[in-house]
Length: 442
Image (cartoon, rainbow, N blue to C red; front, side, top):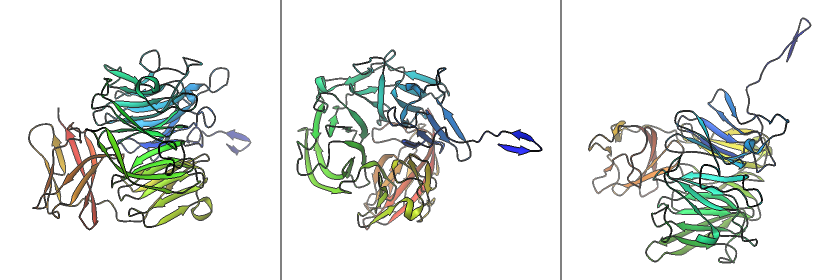
């Protein structure tokens, strides 16, 4: 507002609809998306996105009565390989922004999803992620884990505690909190009161009978598991599983045998004991970032040193860090809290386009063309990531120091057009980052 010559002028300030940032992710254009709500208790102002210049708000309108409805309670956000945006809500199902730029509602009326028993029309979706075959997985609170082939789904399935052995708490309910999918396609499913589980769908996500569920809780691992309240699950660049809880973070290294359907735990370490860890983020250098109720922690790539960021030490807007996102284009860490958003610029080697990968503009799907990574050390590793920081393919250089990539992910599906990053690492741990463009031709 401005007063000039006795007249009052009003200005509409461009900003997010609220100061709460409960979940963060980047889309394929580098736009940051945020969810505002924790259940129906915090925020309740829909979702917002930031293109580096302006904010756009979605579903941040109260009902005619002035009350904020379940439609506004956006608790999670995900972006898939087709560039669709998925918003999970606490009570109103899913808002999905299609490839054509249209919002679609997904709920119990047009899918296999189910509302809570006390109110079948109250549909809670706590987390959403995509597997490497393009299927969308989601945590249907108090019901189970659902998977869609597409939307509208041609195939869909809802896995439950009673039929499929998903972990349930004392009340026999599945209080799902988070879903993560590793490079092998295994699903790791967290809950709020029953630990987490490894879920192997046997390669048939829409068919029962060949599935395996392996639970991890204070009952199955009483000397190791820090808590049954799971807040996040992630994987680092060395195949270590990281599980965040309300009492520290667990670092687990192990092997799953798909033949015997068994898991062998090789090591288990616990860090940040008795601290509530809300989010885990792993950057391209394998640094682990932990958003906690006590600020932001960084564990170096080799797990050798810690750095602690707080309001007092570096100007965080709030020490209750609820969400994290990594901008692969700039190397910045975005930090979501209950009181606003921070961007942390990390000094380090810039992402550079090394002349070691060619062609730089790779046109896939039209023949036998491949991207060649040359002049590498024998047996060095090439990891290829999306702009969202998702690992899509791991290659190993041959004895001549060469590796090739045909533009597919680990499930042999062609990746979408866009910019991709690669990380070259030799046996001594030396790394070089680069980027290349992919144009997919059908």
